[in-house]
Length: 248
Length: 296
Image 1 (cartoon, rainbow over the protein chains, first blue to last red):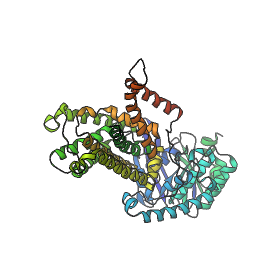
Image 2: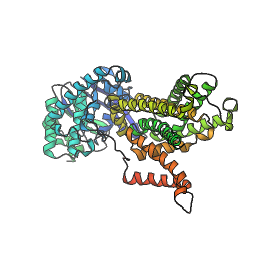
Image 3: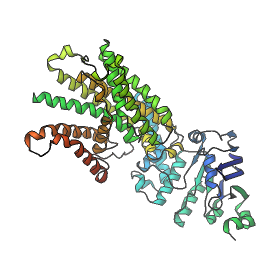
Image 4: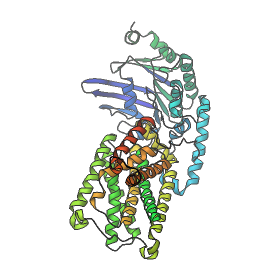
């Protein structure tokens, strides 16, 4: 298990957003997280990535308790997330966006003025890595465009690219294909699948069909609880799932 | 005579350009809303003045101002930079005023409203006859250093991350960056730069008093940045040129044209109007932010 969530509870005032949520994610798999709106999926992603603190319960990453760490500390351990509403750096170019997300700590002021050689060398290495990923996502031709000039779908691809650039152990994708046309959505998931041998994915998504095709394991949430889990085939026939999600 | 006047104008432009570049680092590139720029300018002016009066050389005063400014910057940054942007604006605005009132009331230290006269000027005996030329060169030498420093700082991974913080701070943390730490660094650096500008100001005038450090100075520098070109160091220098030329030009205008009102009194209204027009129709300022090609 690369990621383990244990009995996590989280309330906002009187609303219990997460109630005793436990789940485990195996290494090198794609795990889907589905559920109706307001069922707590994004809250769970926020808790894992440190943007929200748990009330009770624990989150373990590679065996280490991360539930009290800050977002950037969690990121440094190798957890990278994307946001439901794409959040890229609009005033930077595509390439700069990619370079920001490289996990090498290059911001040091010392080397900026006294060891420029090392900084420039590292920059070149990162640039090459960025081009490779942009090529892989087929948006390399946009590298010198401002991120805000990209289309919605291209922005989704870029934010996936940034997550890959950080080279994390696990990527938390919050609705990576929301509002994206079906062809591109499939393409994005094809890319995710190709990356599976290198890392793990936890994906929140409403597009059930696509998850059925690509996931190794699916968790279903409703009203802050996990109500079902299993392989896609098992979930498809599960009556509670049909009840809460498909409204059957 | 006219030559001296031109040099005098140039010196003021240089001093304000340094201040504008320092504001640009924090507000232009990082969007840290510092509305108390004058505080750091005043710290530089008073610290180096007091040290010089006590017999220390200019360079000691300059460095003393930088150190005190850095400390004040840290003191303000630590509690406020974790909060939302508007709190920083309120706290900095207040600290500027608190500091001015401190200088006004602590008579034992600053002579209060009387101000401090006869501030020693660096190397005055050497350049006595052409002192203003020497001082202009000194100011522009320091401006050049500040400009190169700011450009190096911005065209680097450090600067890139600052711009990313400006766009979306939470999203930067996703990539393992300690944004709080980075914001403190840039805030302290630009506070130091503002202090240098204050030191140059005090030793040029050879006289300072608390009424030179009203909040309006902060807003004047903001105007230079917005009109000149936010997030463009050359732009903000141009902004400093424009505002200074305008301020001084209006003083002479009445000698050449006859208007029903004194043009100098109109200047603030016109600068305000310019500011509004720029924000509406040219929000990037005279010179736009440069697009990076990714090469350092």
